[in-house]
Length: 364
Ligand SMILES: *Cc1c(COP(=O)(O)O)cnc(C)c1O
Image 1 (tube, rainbow, N blue to C red):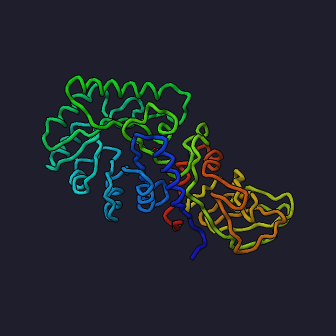
Image 2: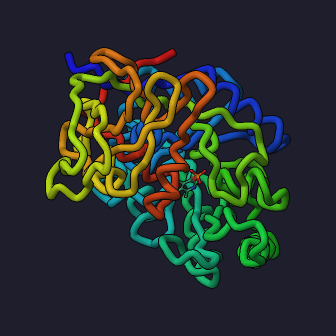
Image 3: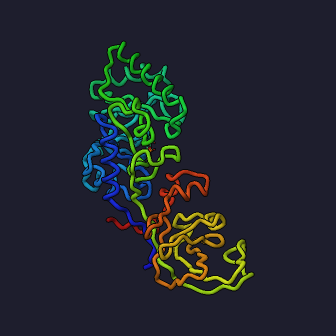
């Protein structure tokens, strides 16, 4: 078997959830485990998070919830977007807390005949999904008028919570509060409200409400550079491999497809059996992203190929079988997912989510 794998430290997940529980209290912590727990493995992460004090889970897709239920996880599961009408039978069978924001969605929930607890999502400014604030009362009424449906929550999602200096988060919370006040004036009391993702849970106390929906922080990845270090999160994921092949390459020779990189001195090149099909982006080689071998930072040389990449090891004594850490810690050195993200002009989320299904996950 290829010696490339992602090690997921469930102790780190528990540590991070513990920090979030403490920070968000009295709000409950909902661990967001969509996209296979951002590449970490949904079922093991969900169990670790629940053991560490999270009381809710959230997913994007009905089939993601089905995977958790099939494993016997019975915690409340919030479905973050409105299901299609033909999915509501499964929503009911899986006992999910469905998000709704259209008359069609509410009618589909009612048509199941099941006693569903709905979370009405209001779009307060991100403009991805959600009911417009001026539609909320009408939708809320149609929920509470159905004796089998309960309006358990009214909620929203923050667009810029990871940039704490921007005022728009307060603006969004104000729009949410206006909706809640309007419902209350109409005699509709809603037991829960929620607005915070990880960044808001960490940095915006006013967003914490009944529940905080935390994804990225659970995995120990800072939501943004601005928030780095605000909570002492521990990265849960290590991407490891081993050197598969070593050779000396002469000065003046190029390397990898396109020969985009030319060595200006004779050097030792180590080949590592992990590539862009595993989520190690091709361009990281052109950007000279470093990996850890023998406790030292060494740059990738040339483009990353589908299954393999090459590392310029200089005159280091490297041999086949040496451990390579692409993301994670080795000795005193560490490479974080956010380092790749900065190089690639993206966010840490995209890095861990991209680690493909071909990479086995091993749990600590
Ligand atoms: C993915 C998602 C979250 C989690 O966001 P993080 O920034 O990872 O904490 C919360 N709420 C909604 C609606 C989401 O889609």
